Image 1 (spheres, rainbow, N blue to C red):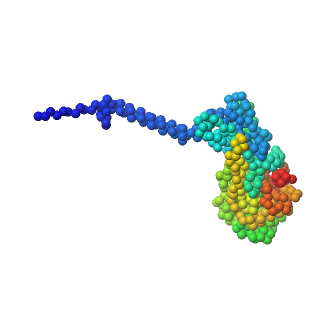
Image 2 (image 1 turned 135 degrees about the vertical axis):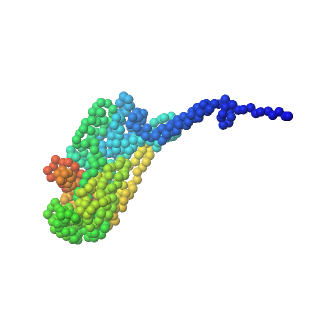
Image 3 (image 1 turned 180 degrees about the vertical axis):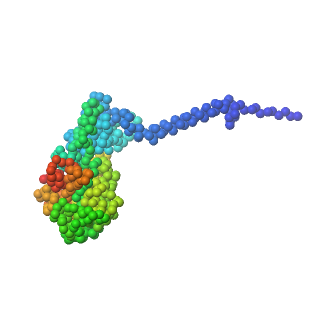
Length: 506
């Protein structure tokens, strides 16, 4: 009988029958592989997906040290710089300095080694600090060599004369000014008072901390940007929006013809009459032009209700109301016009009361849109971004925001506004040799309207005889004044006039 040879039995119990590997060893190997895989996943998550968050974490000092390891790029007004850098001899090699800091604080914001950055200093931080990839000559080599590029410059759209006129006019009052070039949306002035010196806490020393603490404790809130970050009831300046909506909807076809507005006008669904500030308004059938000249609440409230909630909302939103992303590139607070209201609330909102609230920027957009024949341009604070050597990185171009109304309707509203200045409450805005259109506003607020009223004025101006689009539109609000007679025509109109004169070169 033939002898069969038995096959040797494989050692171990592995699936491949590998000799010498026990069950315990195999399990340990698998466990190690899982640990390596988990480590790779975690490293990828941290270094790729969480890299941006970790880089910008407040506790990460590496980026702050890098940001201030060289002079920062500058923010410019025309050819002039309004910022600078100086060596510190400390942990951070350089700190930010400001030329006439309070004048431009509402535009520049601050760049602080201890407290971060805001406004243009924040939005354009990568460019100013030199970390923007667009500044690199050869991005790959710069990344390998960890070479930091010189910071770039931010050229603003500001008109220096207009900015200085705005700050002078506001003086010690709480208030703000926004001025726009209607044809392009370029912001010519952006001022807020009281202001502050962003250079006083730009470093990280004890003196910087003390300056910051004083500003935080100041009840006048000098660091509040009232031009962009604060909303106010616009009062009668909003009647420009209501007039435009009524004309665009055909509720009014002839601004000089009598309307069917009753007097007294009782708010719908109530027994409360909508009162006027002057007896010149106290008769029925006032024309739209007369109602604007004397700022008649009863007529404009009635016309707002006749126009209807939908068209009123649409017209308000054409000028920037209810837009939470109106970046320029800094983001302002959202201006509000309610989209759900009963008729009495529509009447109050049509005269800039109830829950209607606006930033000075948006009210400047209202004036600018009317001046630009009904086309509202997107507001623009930056003209261009450049490398340190002046080479352009990005050039900003004008962009249409909304076409709010036809040129014909805009022309009718322009006539209403010029009549307000020539014959009505806006007389303090007149400029010799110029055509000026405007609208005053005095907005009540507080419990039972007990607060000091907000004094508003919006306007535009152009040289007399010119057929071109007016070169400037302005909104001014005085939020708190020691004056005994708080009116838009008395307090805000003279400031608007000085800003417009600066732009017109008069």
